[in-house]
Picture 1 (cartoon, rainbow, N blue to C red):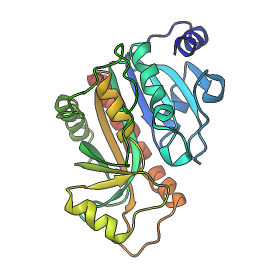
Picture 2: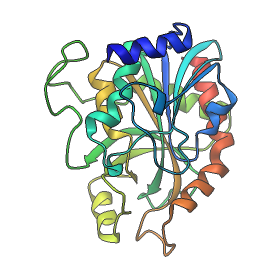
Picture 3: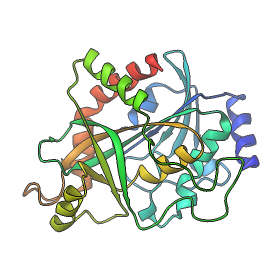
Picture 4: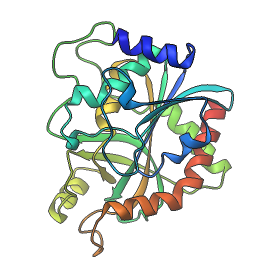
Length: 266
């Protein structure tokens, strides 16, 4: 990791971010508007290339609302064939760079039947149904302890800040539990029913590995999902990635306003 940190510091003139943001499907334009330094993942030692449409694959550094921020303009996913350690490596790098608060965003399918496409949902908790855990393997004591507590991964004080910001901006905000599966196939109607029974409100294929590692590293986590579609079985509409991108495009102005307001209050 030392060579990764040294490379980034050289490229950014030792920019020291305090807040990290991981931008999910269709939400990457936020980093285009705020960019002091940008480095492609393919240039950074030990980073892996993002292959999903809608994910540019850049690490972007900027000062926004008086805060020094590093943004992942697109993430890597378990379903792309990468290991858990590979997809969560950037979170560990953020920790080493000085990030104390991590905002995780994603596009998700609605399990809660009261949710509508383009809704924004604050994540209150998650269910890891990915079949593995990013902390499996040798422990790095410089990052965190072997058995981290998971009772408050998504910090309540950050959730309250996000709610206040949404209220100030007159954005109707949802709250709920995010259910993570490995993908890349969408869930079946039976799996959607199972997720609902287990207490999920939205389902997706990311975020949870990053949240687990960020919590392990002692970072404060806020999660925001853009509801891009109704999960399988909730409606008769066939699911597609193009629909995900189209819906997140409709929500991006509200998403941008909300994130900017949150950054002001952090």
